Image (cartoon, rainbow, N blue to C red):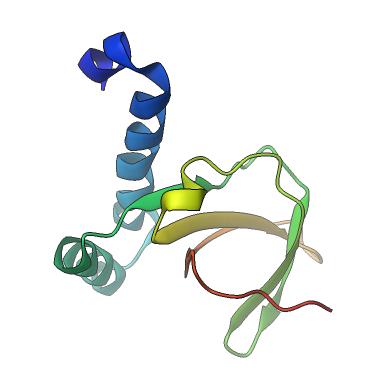
Length: 112
């Protein structure tokens, strides 16, 4: 990344976040999730975007039967326009606890 940043800092930023988001499964996921995301990323040549920031509390979520319902506005989302997978984060609207998840970037959201 440092060598690339010497020539194009913005490209190095996006590529660095791609790798940093991909390895989040290693830090926060189960062994099954790690195997799934690493294998599928290699198989489908996924590019990862970043829409996670533990300091930004503008995204709130609530547990749901099939995961979580998440809503809010994000100040930035590095590489998301061109990504296949997007690492997202939110705070639980009841406990305030910090959570991380992954969604396909092409997934359509629902309005409430």
